[in-house]
Image (cartoon, rainbow, N blue to C red):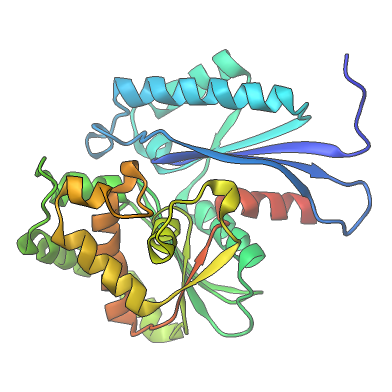
Length: 317
């Protein structure tokens, strides 16, 4: 029997297509006090690996998901959390056996997973980014590259002007354009991906012309990796500052570096998470494409995304 805390403890779980995130915070009863972060961790689950492009979660990632959530449940119990909020995105949204996984997670851990639509995902991401980056009064382009979907939001600190979720995440792009096991990404594959993006991202192109955002704010995953490459060291989730200025020259250098090597050579680049070594290539092609069509030259990264957005929403309720 544990004694009730003078504070409320919350766990926020973001079940992404590549990475599962867990954030445990303590909320003070004193109004206006910032939540105290007790734990911020993530696990590379790659839920989309070997299946998302065919509309299923393959057996191995399915098992990894259950294993990861069993670990999260231990942390939640250890921290005596009173309330758990778990959201799932693209992989569970679009796969035939996504609902089975939601059920199995509940049966094995007691954690209820809310599978959210892409539009809601975009809203929460924007809300999270606003906690890390002051978007001010001018419109910015917020971009979150997941494994299954990519969210684009044009917003300032108070208003969302436009948002859309596209099912073109890094695992899907990898399956479509990068089947070579040696990990060499030929120029023809880059061109093929760019042509594909040109057709899929027409709504984004129109929105960019209309709202003319002044900077690109990249949330989570691939952008964290690019910030780590700029620094030349791999940081853990808790070591990342809320936001980082990513020099355009640094991005361009990282992009060249990623394109020029094979899988082994990319693994050797300081700051690269092994799980992202190939995904980062297709993600960088996407970022480069977006910079090209928008004319944006300023890039910021936000370590905050969906789960921080969910927290901010809960605190303001």
